[in-house]
Length: 520
Image 1: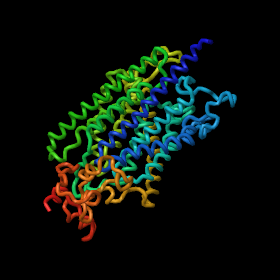
Image 2: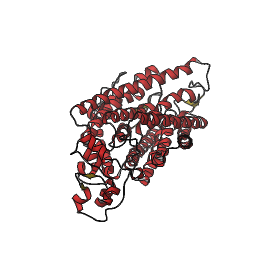
Image 3: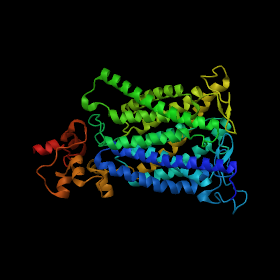
Image 4: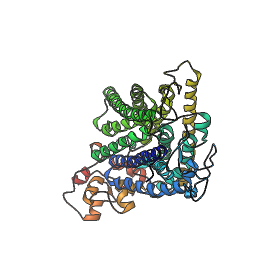
């Protein structure tokens, strides 16, 4: 038996490190799905779950055919890679001489230390994550084909170009401009947030969200949302701490540890800061009880916003910096959330506010707080490697980092917005974008997929709307005299029938609350 060389051992360790991180990031996408599913009304919960399956199926095929080649393909130029379409000659060193068997996973130090298939898997999980996060903003009103087309566009084209520009060999943002985004505050999360915002604007608000008055549409399950939040936090631990794609060497081990601690600190600080800020706002405004914000979901989102913000430099911050980054992320999230609400943009689980607020602040925080100590190629420490405003305020190179961050943010937002807007514009033009008003009110699960997420009697009780004088309960299981008095909106608010008659004519759809039905 021939003993493994040090280089082979390092390659094995780094490959396993990336494999483990990829598996956890995949679970992170599942966590986002649970947050979305618990944060919507019960009659639409299954639609959110099915959406993730559709994105998984379509995104892996799109990324395999074109996405990975654009992002990390061989013979790359500053714009895109030009090899490995549908895995053509991918990792086949023995069959095709000259093809590298290990990837350039750490572009800054040109380290080739991971198996290409594991590298592909890891970066696919990031692609899946971006697409799934963005699509969560379309909940409760989006048609099934939209998710497939959106997934193909994001996974096969939009995100891979951004990934190449920042992290790929010769990418113009990372190599030419010198911008940095270690964990993806801009490339991953700001991209998802912008895509979510554009799609939500085209879809419009859910029925009854802002008319005849602004009224929260509460989700149906805090336990499901909490489990999703735990999985998302778990994903951030490995995503942020593994931003270097390397763990061997004293300096890289130190950066992994810093990434873990900084992620915890930033997320916790953001959650605490948001909760206090929201309580102060409510003390000043004193809104009615049924108009208060969804405290649990919003606090979960603020924790996520802190972790999103610290991602750009989690491996490069001192812990005290992560606390500041998290506190400001909470304020950024709150302001974006208030702004979108003021503009009557209906985002069921606040996806856009979380990821634009956290991601935009995070990319600008990096040149301000980054440590000057960094790793060298053999894994040891190098002092005074990086420039940052906090540590080198008098050096012009430190301030140049803000310009690099501004360039990164502008490119990400413009590139994503243009292509997502084009897709949704076409879909809206051909009337393929949004489910009907009837399907939205009665539940997408049953009328789009033919199967509710929950037992039919629970589904019917949660839905509660009347259409054409019949309830779903009567149509499916017969008339029941003890129809349950359950609704999902705050206070069981009743929308006047006259409002719908006025909008739809005398023969239009009439909607009553369950309370009114029981009084008849």
